Length: 428
Ligand code: EPZ
Image (cartoon, rainbow, N blue to C red; front, top):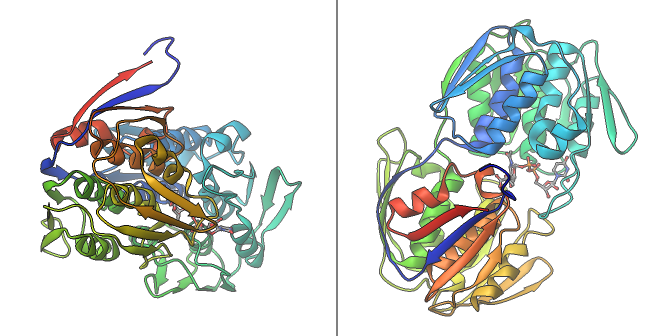
């Protein structure tokens, strides 16, 4: 695309039930912290099953700016952090890549300082990083901030005991990455238990870190002198899996998903069963695990409260809500993680959906079919939700996307077409 306006247009002909099999891409929210953690060891770390998504390319660019060598080809990422020399993350990079905040812990550990900027809010919420800064301060970091720029310094980080006010995924990840080379033992309480946090802890252990307690909410880290490069295969992306399952719930049909462990999808699968889906699991964990789902009715109304893992994931709220917009009953979704994650829900009005939002709760009165509509994606998961709604609309819908979808989905149009959706795409 040369000289285009950077708009991707999806033309969706709805009411085609989905059928087929799909292998899920590697988990974006596991790869990003592991890319940051790679900076903790001199030498070349290799991460496989890495999705070719914008967020990975952006994080790779930032890691290169810091002096590391990065190769990314055919879903294999090689990061050589031997040459790490920079400690400044440019304001431009932070603006494009909120997850650059995950570099705070590794850079403080490895280089003793980091200059960066507050990532700022986004359409789903303010996204502060106060918990990140508080736990790093408790480990001995001096952090100056003028509300915009952040300068953090620590000759040495020290073990601490810290209780998170909320089980923040990113703050837990930053704290663990700061603690692995700290002097002494760190005990983190009220930690996030997301599978991606557990995967990061396993990744760090394979580098020589001494970590225990992930998945329990209390993580203990005994600092070590040095960490070593490692090789790792990324687990499947549970949010991508949940997205395609929600799409099948909205459109009807029968799909099979591989490449992700059903054991990390318990709440979404429970909700799908309540919606009337027939779910069969072959192998709860391991590379041969399969999820087979058949949807022969309109989704029954359900009640969902999002929450920290193992609760229902906030990242699946919008796509499940879109499926229920084409359901047969009344549903209630309460968003407890973010303060403003109903933008997509409100844009479903473009498809004739009956959705009313009051503070943290959305009430959906299902109607089927939905009407063909025209809408622009508000954010990554909200964009997926609009596609889900279009699959259940009687006619041709048009969805415009300014790069949100490719941040987290390798190629959502390709994947849905693989499942039989009638979707054409073009770039403007
Ligand atoms: C991670 O974001 C994910 N991103 C998000 O996925 C996901 O929605 C979120 O966890 C919750 O599961 C990555 O892993 C890259 P949090 P993170 O810190 O770490 C508040 C997607 O679509 N908070 O657990 O930023 C915060 O405002 C993305 O893939 C503070 O108040 O999430 C939010 O309300 C979207 N202070 C809540 O906690 C802090 O210092 C949860 O945030 C940190 C967080």
